[in-house]
Image (cartoon, helix red, strand yellow):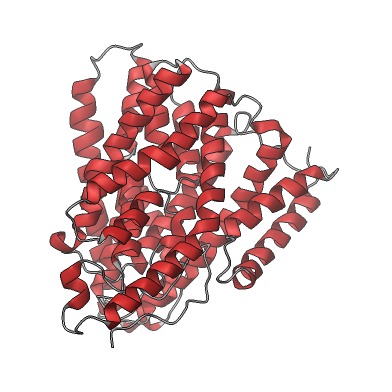
Length: 453
């Protein structure tokens, strides 16, 4: 039995470092998640009585811990988006969701079946688990704080934020398909129910519930007739947690996808009173909670790796993860954005930064509690953990320099372009000034925004 006093002490140190490190790592090619990963590995090398980081033994606990972390991140992402919901202005997001997500799932499933020889149910599960861009660890390349300007989100940060906000929910039908395939022993009699219920109904219920919850809460926050109920005047940041859990819980009660509902709720609250300072209060609180949860979870991931969690990983399993990060996501992301709003440089960044993280851990933990996929759980965890680890390192050291250079190049281009309509017409919109940071675990000290002259 681990020493509870030691756990409290370690949790306190981790929370303190989650507040200090982002400022120390500001503008460096070294992210807070990467620091937490290394810290967790070093911590578990010490002869301390720490909790066992085995996801197989503690699957249910890990499922709920990662679930809460993803929910909080989705609320933060929705509250940060400054661009109004206009379908034409979200075209890059639709392209990534409509093309990159399903193509990635299919390509990963084929790679898993071909390289590892796993059953199709396990291959589909791994494709669904690893396909979504993570809303937690992707914060280094997402939009920053909510501001008054509706044009302040550059195309790269906006697209990666909105993609991460929606594709975590849209991956759920694919996870359910893998569960149904495993439960049916390979038959397809489940397909009709899956299409009608798991795909159409649950996605639709998530969107509708999110809109209703967001409008009701937005009216309460900003326009309640009784001033004591007009929460925006009292500036309580923890209300963001209330909105998160309320939208999620009510949606799940009607068997909709709560992940979709939480992101839609956040965007709807943001749109209720776009220029009100209470948006920044809500986002600031939720961002701090997200950073705290993520620091703790990444510490455990470091402990999992250093205590032999990757012992079941083969070179073929590692090859699947590297294929996803270096070939499949970049290729499908590039193809999906051809002919769209982003310019060539922005397309490359969008395609490359398909960050995998906490969401993948949640989906795998959830699925393993629902069905047997014919593959040892240790092997599934080894492949997913390796992919998350590789993504954390690869994207953690490249996010700040790449986004800083993109902002610099974009600012240089904007300086040579007429002020009226320049960025919008070319598709190379200006940066939001958060070089290497989108809130959450990124640098909280945003750089000065690149403005049109």
